[in-house]
Length: 319
Length: 275
Image (cartoon, rainbow over all chains, first blue to last red; front, side, top):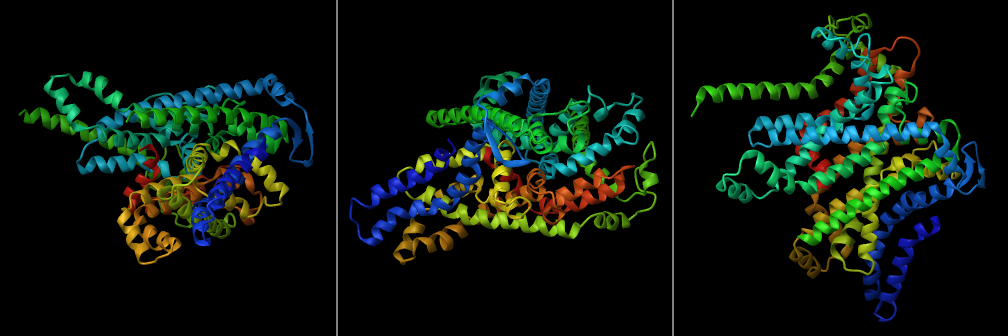
């Protein structure tokens, strides 16, 4: 399986280079001309083959074996045993539910709030540009700092957030220290980090809508709400779709905030897929379980990618 | 027409804009303010806003709490090596995808696009396994090589190369310039804004990256700044938030400075995929 994945680009490359180069019996210069494009793409494709397509095949191979990082020599074929074991694991269901809940909340809030912000901030005046840059800035800051900063602000005893709540006369919140609130706190941090990015993407989308459609709507005396529903939202559907895919994939892979802020706790209430794979594989030396969970995550992301590409190609044909 | 109503409306909008800005700026400001406080002041509730006395030595304490010079050198070396390697793999590939017609081009470009979509978090485990089988774990190689080619870079540069007018290339060919030379001496300079954009994207991504060095290394000689900063937390006893925030400033401030001067470029780089 994995050999096929690696060899594909090269074989195809060599075959077509061969087919083009030889039958025509061109002079040496001409032969090099046909090989040249393949030579140019080879270095990049070699990296992809080695660090991308080979690992995809290899993790499938690993998921059918019992192995551990303690002794990599011994890999025993076990068929689907890792998958059946994984599905009997109570923890794994918790992890899947956490990941799903975290993804739905982060994606819905991140996109919904960004949409409203974009409608508001899509103006020419300089102040709007400054605000756009400001809300974007968390997106380029290391998740390490974002996590530690929020962890400090969420400190139950001395944190800024509880100080603000108290000043407003509200009761202190438990933030990361309670099973009920920890996941929501992580959602808050992720939304804070991503909402500026989503807003900027929406603004780019809004600006690509042709002005004359709005002028026509104005002539028809369409109400603002109606214009929003009938023109803006449909015209933004490629942007909305893009954000759904990108945000979902990045929510599936959430790791840094968990590793720094909660380590999956309290009582695995914030344990999610990538962190689970990391724990099982690197800390508990359960290679088989970890690779089976990796394959499932890979399947989910692969499915989203396929849907994305199908949508993109339809859009291209449509134009 | 209704000057008073307009005035009230504008004032409310400005207050809302200020509130939104504060929501995103204040946490950074809080990081900076905490970094200058003393420990007793950090653990005061309700907290003080400005530090009572500005403790500049917190930064020295943070810097000395681990081999931070090593972390900094590693971070810069890894991020810049990746960038150089990515440029040397992306420029020829993007040039071929943009300017040549060859059999299998669409399939090969399709593979590149797939690589763009699947994040490293999904396939870190198999990479870790074969990297340790090849004895590359705990080396700087394990941080650099997996990022040797950037699908995003190829995608971005291809787009830029396709926009160079044919006449430019034909003129160069008439001058008997070799293809290799046309690529580096004609195309690359014309794609300079895109190269800057991509360079910023790549550098910021790898400067910030916590996941990959955490997976691939467990030895501080080859670890990078984000790991060093994150490890400040793991010590026993009271969490020294003032020192930790000072450490985080080392990680954050360079990026904020770059962002301040190249905001348009950076925003373009990060939202490019959506277009």
